[in-house]
Length: 247
Image (cartoon, rainbow, N blue to C red):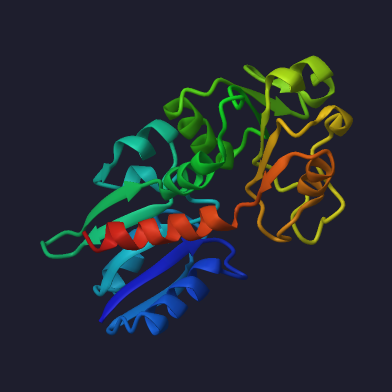
């Protein structure tokens, strides 16, 4: 039996367990299980692996995407540049397990964004500058799309929501929400931008997927913008984890 799982805290609900359990059943993948491992501190991962010699891979969620890195033997270039890990492959064939970290969020975001991009999508606004923004910045750099980070409170290398003007929105036609604004149960919240200046030239991407259409996406769609939520990104990053664990 090969075991895979998710570490983080708390783990009250998990897309990953449902996704992989259904994948194993639908694709008739035997001798595999996917479990939830709620751990409060990153260093608890090592004891978890020692106690579960069948573990071959872990997904990582908050609050451990950054503080897990010192416990890894190796991380791939994307995860290194992003500064966050959300997937770990575990090789238990030797005396000590070998752990390698990856960031599949970047892959998921990139593959779901690229088909939507058109010639006029030259610059992007990133709403929020937390952990989720790290992978978004990496992908935009890879795609050579300049961006501005937009935040609520003054911060280095960022502008305030109050600074967004019609002129800025005319120039920056890709809008990416990396904040939890609009996420269930706070359905009425949204990034405070002047939506009246949006047009059919804009592309709005929300990393939130619950609800499927956030207030941010509703408001941008009402202005004729193209919209996308984070659900496909979630599926793509999960499939990428499975690929990593099996190669």
